[in-house]
Image 1 (cartoon, rainbow, N blue to C red):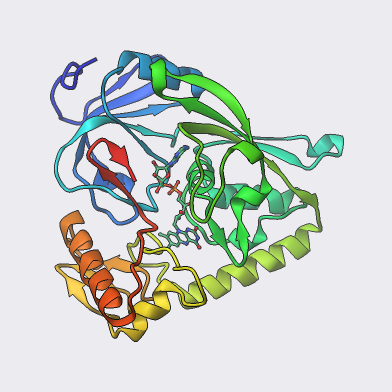
Image 2: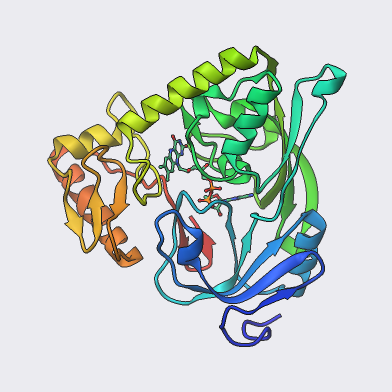
Amino acid sequence: MKAGQFGRAGGAGKELKGACVMFGEPMANHTSLGIGGRAEIFARPSDAEALMRLLEYASGMPVFLIGGGTNLLVPDGDIRALVISTQDMKGIKTDVPAGGTVISVAAGEPLKKVLAFCMQNGLSGLEPLAGIPGSIGGAVAGNAGANGLQIGAAVRSALVVDFSGGGTAKTISRENLGFRYRGSSAGGLITNVELALEKGESQEIKKLMIKNFDMKKKTQPLASRSAGCVFKNPEGKNSAGRLIEEAGLKGVRVGDIEVSRMHANFFINTGKGTAADFAGLMDKVRGEVLRRYGVALEPEIKMFLGEKCL
Ligand SMILES: Cc1cc2nc3c(=O)[nH]c(=O)nc-3n(C[C@H](O)[C@H](O)[C@H](O)COP(=O)(O)OP(=O)(O)OC[C@H]3O[C@@H](n4cnc5c(N)ncnc54)[C@H](O)[C@@H]3O)c2cc1C
């Protein structure tokens, strides 16, 4: 399918065998920053089969993936691509009633809901991640982490649809998912994740989740529009946030994007900030940290660049 075959942008929806398809959908509506131009085609398949049909139909087009959009910087202009959202991939299954500790979660489920499920079912292991927004698929793709835990440690396997050749689905075990600091090498769209947890006490799990979430609220600007940490922590003891703060950059702005005064590694959209402003502020901060400390900060947030999401 060539771009435009669906008709021109305008936001009308269409059902394509298990996938809602929109044209000219503003990506700003799907990112926590509230930034992003219109996607030529925006589709929400409900499962792996619908996704594979969609890929076959749209073969030849650049493809971008989005989960909760909480770690993404999307460009301001038109996005001439098929953007696939996992937001309609829903469902949590478990073997807990049979005495097990494994849950199987569809990619679009919010991490928050997965944590609530764990709490209700006395499943321990993910408590350190309380307060991280976004979907389980995005968390696994980016190996999201907090308080010493990276989610990859709890993953047993993932069902991944590989885009090459119109899409093939395969189950990949944790050992082959290539988890690293804020990344993995899943190599396609994760449609389902199996997590291996431990038995625990619901009340204890709840207490720990609340404690971690309270700490996060005290140290991060959760009520503002951000995409989480902008830069990865460099190797060694220094955190990116500390380097940016020590460089005196808290409160520095480009347009409406500001270095958070609460946590210097969060950039806030204070109003009508654009992706260009955000990228400009990244350059400014990176340049200053490099000049002062000789440390080249690397982006943690992902960007739709050219035909790739990096
Ligand atoms: C206030 C705030 C606090 C945050 N705190 C933390 C934190 O403590 N720790 C942390 O690690 N992160 C944190 N983040 C960043 C972000 O929430 C996480 O990285 C989250 O796991 C991203 O999930 P998502 O569904 O929003 O992914 P998206 O932003 O939608 O996508 C991120 C990347 O993953 C890819 N992707 C998404 N879904 C899939 C899928 N199903 N299969 C394959 N690839 C996919 C996208 O293409 C993109 O490259 C925070 C963000 C905010 C706004």
